[in-house]
Length: 374
Image (cartoon, rainbow, N blue to C red; front, side, top):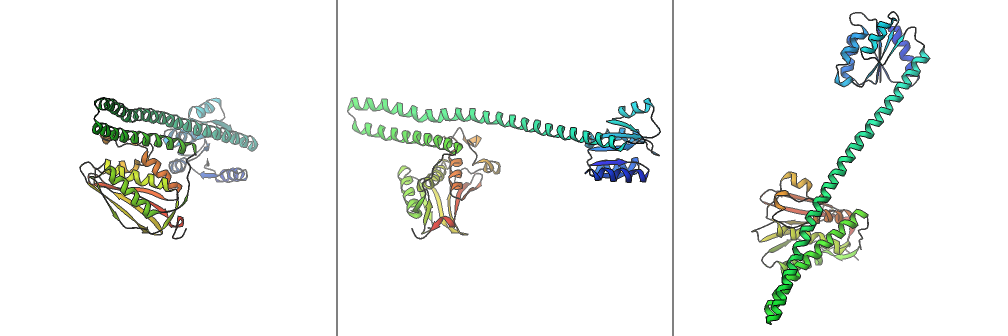
C-alpha cells in the first residue's frame, strides 16, 4: 500500500486517482501528525511525502518514521515545489528518502519510479523468503543429521545386545554338549532363541522404516476374524510372559477387511510395550468394541506413564523418552510403524496417559472397513 502525505487536498485527490487507475492501493494523510498515526497502525510499502507542510515538514516526518521498527523497510519519496536547491535535496536523502522529486511532477516519470521501486521491493521480498526458507532447510538438515547419527548409535547398540547374548549362549552350548548335559543345552537353546527373536524383530522394524520412507510398505488386505486374531495374540503373549495377566474386555463379532499380519503387529507392539514399561506390574487390560461406527481397541497398562510433552512426541520416528532410554531397550520406531499401519487402514492411533500411573494406547478403524459377512 502507498501512503500519500500532503496538506493540499486537491494534490492528494489527483495523485490518488492516478495511482489507483494504475492498480496501486492508496491511503492518504493531510498532515505529518496524521501520517505518523497511520504509519503506527498500518504497513506501507511506499510513502510519497510532501516537504512543505505546516507544523511538521516532510523532513521531520521522515526522521520520526525512521525510528519506527515497523516502518524500517518502508521507502520514502519526497515531493517539493519550493525547496529545489541541492541542500534541500541532500537533506531529503539524508533523512532517509529513496528519491527527491521537484514539482510540477511529471506523472509518467513518477509512475515509472514507483513501478520500478515496487519491482525491486518484490524481488527483495522474494529473496528474503528464499533466504529464510534456505535457513530453515539448513536447520532441518542439521536436525535430520543429528537424528540419523543418534539412531545409528542406538541401532548399533540394540542390535549388538542380542548378538552378544547369542554368541555367549553358543559358547555355553558347546560346553554343555561336551559335558553331555542335555538339560543345560535345552535351556541355553531356548534363551538363544529368545535373543534371536529380538534380533529378528529389530531387523524387521528397520526394514519397515525403510519401506515406509520409500513408499514400498505393502499391505495384503482381506477379511479376517478380529476376535479370533486377538485371542491368538493374547495366548502367544501369555506363553512368553506367563507371569503377566492380560485381561480382555469386550468383543466385536465382525470380520475386518485389512492386513491381518499388520494389525497383529500393532496389537503385539501395544502389549509388549505394556509389559516392558510396567516394571513391577502384573496385568494389562485390553478393551475392544464398536463405538461411534468404529472398531476400537485399547491396551491399558499400569506402568510408568508419560508426561504431556512426551505424549505429544511418542509416535514420532526414533523418539525415546530420555529418562527411560537407559532402562528399556528399543529403537523408538515401533509406535511410529504402528501409526503408519493404522493410518493406511484409514484409522487413527493415540494414547491417554497419567505420569506414574500408566498409559492406554488405542486405535480405531472406520466401520466402512468392517463387514459381518465375507
